[in-house]
Picture 1 (cartoon, one colour):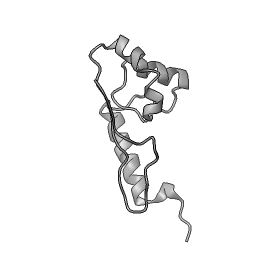
Picture 2 (tube, one colour; picture 1 turned 135 degrees about the vertical axis):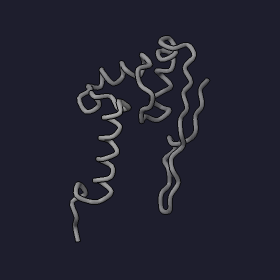
Picture 3 (tube, rainbow, N blue to C red; picture 1 turned 90 degrees about the horizontal axis):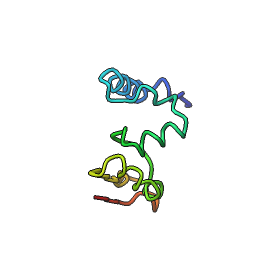
Picture 4 (cartoon, one colour; picture 1 turned 135 degrees about the horizontal axis):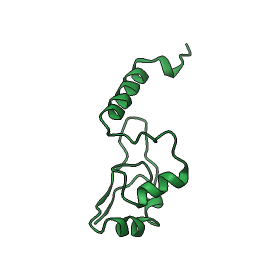
Length: 97
């Protein structure tokens, strides 16, 4: 049986969680409206707490981030492990301090 994912209990829970993040000011209100230029600018100017990009993206931008915040600490989290799932080669731990 096919089920549209937007009506599943998991999706409803995820949507409620995202709404809570927004209401508590933990999510950028422009998240769904950012252009790539705006998003990149927020990252390199140390205006975000967390983002989803692999270490191949970070390597070329860490100097820009450090100019905005010389004490920046960047942690790259490894991919979650799960049955039947193999993380890609980019999902390895990276720590820059």
